[in-house]
Image 1 (cartoon, helix red, strand yellow):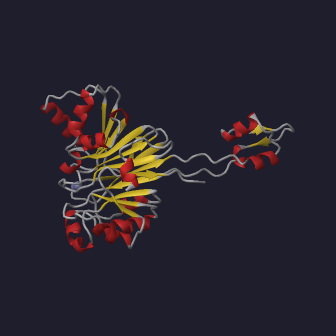
Image 2 (image 1 turned 135 degrees about the vertical axis):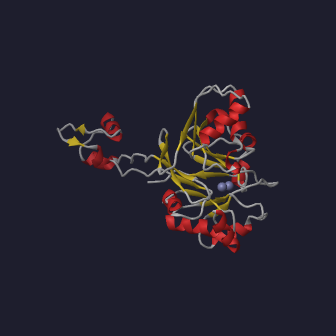
Amino acid sequence: MGERTAALSARAPAGAIQVTFLGTSAGIPTETRGLPSLALSLGGEILLFDCGEGTQIQFRRAGLRPGRLAHILISHLHGDHVLGLPGLLMSLQLGGRTQPLGLHGPPGIGDFIRATLERLAAHVAFPLEITEHSGPERVVHGSGYEVECRPLEHRILCLGYALQEAPRPGALDVAVARRLGVADGPLMGRLKAGESVTTADGRVVTAREVLRPPVPGRRIAYCTDTRPCPACLALARDADLLIHESTFTSDRAEDAQQKGHSTAAEAAAIAAQAGARRLALTHISPRYQDPEAQRADAGCLFPATVVAADLQRLTVPKRVA
Ligand SMILES: [Zn+2]
Ligand SMILES: [Zn+2]
């Protein structure tokens, strides 16, 4: 409950990656769950994954700042994932946005948004940089992170995404540097910056000799809508957080298969196989009013599971060396 309450003050601690669930329902909204959307905040930027109807209201409720929105990544062209886009873009325009916005998704996303805005005579003056992907490929090359996409297994082309943070350089092992004859002071700083230095007695010491191994960056995967598939596994590999659809529970495994969706237990099996650290279930069918059904279905296979609620926020801590 603590993390959920914290959603009201959206300031992230320095260096934190935060995921805010804006809509966690599937197909149609319920009293408590809106249509799919999720905001990922890192380094002062927000990436929005999917944009179901009502996303812009949830975005405000979560205390997120529209000026920080840098990229929108759409999984597929089913209405529950895209119908919030025209309204959001129109509000950004009315809010006086001037900075560019990336919009990424499967082929057709550009047509959809251009045709809708044109029909509504809604002019978007800020640069809207639309790119269409079929994957696997890199979608965003950000500062200190990248986002890749892969085609999942759904009824139409649907992209899963993984955000991979760049590794952090390892810390300087001062004791080793001293042992090699490096004096305290500016030479230490240069080694830390990755340079080689020459000691007072003429010996060359390279950064490699004195830096600890790099610390891997964080990885967050977003897989919805989909059957469990090798692409989910690849995106979720070693992820700090896997966000996976969980439209059904195991007693409706046949429905999941026929409709191109997953059960909570199938999502949990992907998380376990991929070596993910945490699993957040979303895209919950309106038939489930109590999240306990989903949690129980997934929990025995993968205990580190949360059933996401609207406006719930999860923090992904930095990895330690
Ligand atoms: Zn959906
Ligand atoms: Zn769908």
